[in-house]
Image 1 (cartoon, helix red, strand yellow):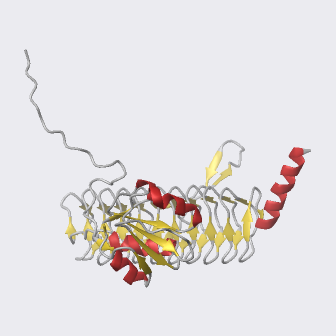
Image 2 (cartoon, rainbow, N blue to C red):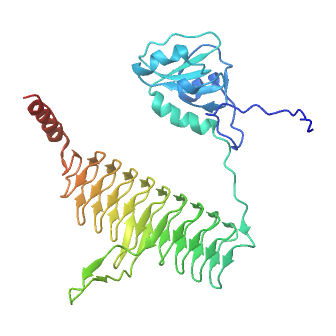
Length: 353
C-alpha cells in the first residue's frame, strides 16, 4: 500500500501576468502626473509595477482610458492607476488614482518605458560554441552567442548583440549597437545599419523570386540575383520577415522604417524613411515606397509600382498602380479611400433592392 505524502503546490499567478520576466520598475501615481504634466485625482502614492487592459488589471496595474468607450470599464476594473485623456468625465475611486493627460494613448507609450525592466545587456565577447571563420571582423565590444556563424569577410560592429543560431554570411556587415535575435540569416554581402533590431527568423538577402520560361518551352529558367539588401539605421524588422536581395544593385530599407512580422519584400525594392508596413503584406519586386508611407496588414503590392510620400494603404488593399503622395487608398483593386467607401455604400443599397 502506497502512502501519499502531502506537498505544497504553489499557487499560480493570474494567467495574464507574464512569467519569467525581469522585475519591473515601481512607478507611483505622483511620478506619472509629474512626467506628463498631468492632473492627478486621487492619492499620490499608488504604486504600479505593470500595465494591462482595464478588464485584466489588479491593484498594482496601470491602465488607460483614451475615449468614452473605456469610461464604463473603469468602475468594474481593479486598476490602481489610469491615464485619462482630458475632456473625459471619469469618477474617482477610493484608493485609486486618475492622471488626466492630453492624450492617454501617447502617454501610455512613455509610461510603458517607465515600467519596463532595465534591458539585459549582452556581455561583450564570443561564445566558445560560435563559429567565427578566419577573416571575420568582430568588434571587441560586440557579443556573439552560441552556435552563431560569422563567415569570412563579415563584420559585426561595436556594441552589437548576435544571438544564437544567427548566420552572417561572407561579406555581410552588421553596424553598431544593433540587436540580431535568434536564427536570423544575413546573406550575400547584405548590410544591417546601426541601432537596428532584427527579430527571430528574419532572412535578409536571399535570392529574389525570378524565373523565365525556358527557350524550349519546357520548364522555367532561374534569373540570377547578384545584388544585396541594405538596411539603414534604426530599422526594426519583425519575426520571419524576408527581404530579398536585388537582381543587381541593392534592395534598400530607409532609416527609421518599421516592418512587422511575416512581411515579404521583393528584389530591388526601395523603401523610404520612417515607413510602417504591417504584417502579412507582400511587396513584389522593384517597388518604390516614399518616406512616411503607412501600409496596413495583408496588403498586396504589384511589381514596379511607386507609392508616393505620406500615402496610406488600408488593410487588405491590392495596389496594382501607382499611388500619389498623401492620399489614402483601399480595396481590391485600390481606390481612393472616399471612392471606395462610396462604392461600398452603393453596393449595400443595391443589395436592398
